[in-house]
Image 1 (cartoon, helix red, strand yellow):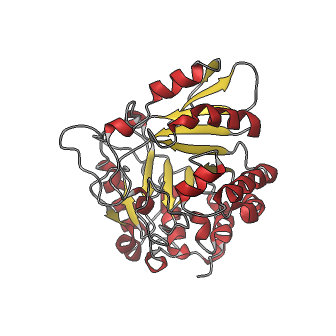
Image 2 (cartoon, one colour):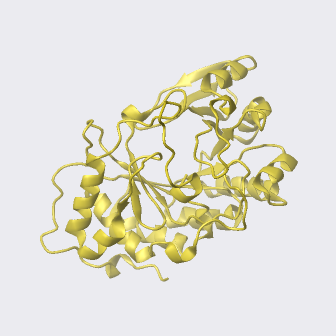
Length: 345
């Protein structure tokens, strides 16, 4: 579907003018960030995420680019400053580059994207020219053969390696690398990932495994905790803490010897950051989720048809019901009905 130009957007509903204050939930948190899953299709079948199959998701259920633009017009008016495009695999969605370019008049402060990197080498330069500022690549092993087994795609490592290099050349720096650690799976590579950060001049972010996979593998015992990661790293390197900025979810460290690269640790299981969460999430089929672990979704598409005022009201209602925190590992914890690939990373 063609991407609308800035001048082709539908006008807002009559009387839809100045927004009455920022998006604030009942716990006082101001919402400034949105993650948009533009597709739940993915060309990888990572063993800790997917049970199998060729391609998760269905293109026919994806919200159109024109509809997404109308949603973002409302969100920008409500104080959303940062956007991150996710999936599935967002680079599978045709028209993404043109869509990013069309957002320039809306004035978002930060445009970022999370990708598995398989298609990145061919698109990195165009993404940067379109206005994308930052990129994160998911990479769960620095060993080529192991990574191909994880992704269940032959030659995956080489494609991701080339994508990272292309992103750096295009100026999408610093490139961040997200590594989900699972005990007995890839936890033997913590030090190797640190060396990868130093050698490739990237930010490696270790993420505690969350119960959002299709195969229901998650147990507390399989989680590699932030404490364990730090102990392993500090046994080899002297690390210096870096300041946490805004709604940043990672604890950040640099190498005291001055080597390039950086380490981040995101610990949603053992050290939740719910108290300063500033984000909402939008699914590929147009639902708003106020948390990864929400048990309720808010239908944007129906409100969108009713006009800007109705859509704004729905977003405000949803944010007012944002959960105080998740309950991973607690008695009675309920998994969301969707898994990560269908929510958006």
